[in-house]
Image (cartoon, rainbow over all chains, first blue to last red):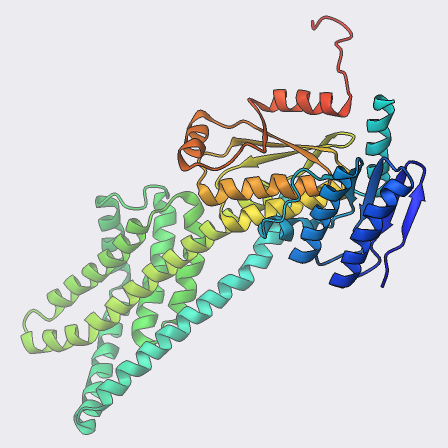
Length: 120
Length: 331
């Protein structure tokens, strides 16, 4: 199942619908990295609210997305990690250091708006 | 609020306890049956005759104890007073308890069943443990009773040495089992109380409190074991989501010591909170804990630490954009 990428002002939003295969994740990674420059977006929000399991591949892909987006001159915020998922990830050592996180989509948007308001 | 909550815990606990007791009793029954098995390996005829003789002796013994009830009981109570046992109880109370213990004791000797005595011992322990009666006192008084009764047997049968021997053969194992039963009952009850208190402490000491919009504090008090650490983390993460918290202050002023496991768990909790978009501030690290953490080399570099809870809350307010101003000079 392909993940739709929505353009919302200066940001791109990708919402995970359900459990994704590794191929879907790779596809999403490529799509985001291409579109972030095409739309001259300043940031990308990845919403993982629907994911109740996060395996090491998904976690690593998220970090790779964040790093690649940074190299393309934008920022990444991951939103909607479930409490159980968060704790499981930390126990596995998948802590997504240097990637911004927020409670949900609203918080993520608020964080980015705040950040780019001061930058302007 | 607390007491309601407490009684709920007690109820839940009593389930586990009765299981323990049942298990204890089963063990005892098993031991008994194995003893009987090994005994029946001997010549059966002799064994049977002996049992009959011994139960007859026990009957005689019980009759003797019933006859001299008043005198023996008084003797026992005065011995208790002499040895300064049960100082937490009044004289009347000791006498009343002594009467029931004496009667249950004689009954256990007569029927050779210990369930009633066990139940009584449990009930007694429940009543006297809150008053600060110690294990050595309970064991002490039961042993005193055993001695008082043995003395009276000596006095009664001093002319007939053979009979005395046989009476003691019948009396001693039963008396020892009674002492054992009472002591075990007391210790089990004590353990139950301790477990119950531990549970209560555990439950009461893990609140997640909201002090301001989007600011939570988690005061941790007491010993943290892995199970409690996990519970703390779960509560905190759930609290972050339901209160939509942005900043969490974890106060560990009340934590006496910290080992590698707990320190790592704390780091994990901080990281997991961050994944939910909340910043954590750890406050109240005592000098000892700070030294321990440095010595064992736990990486606390990723953690925000502030000296005390007040400082932590002030820092959190800054992060959230609050500014607290005094409207007037304090009076």
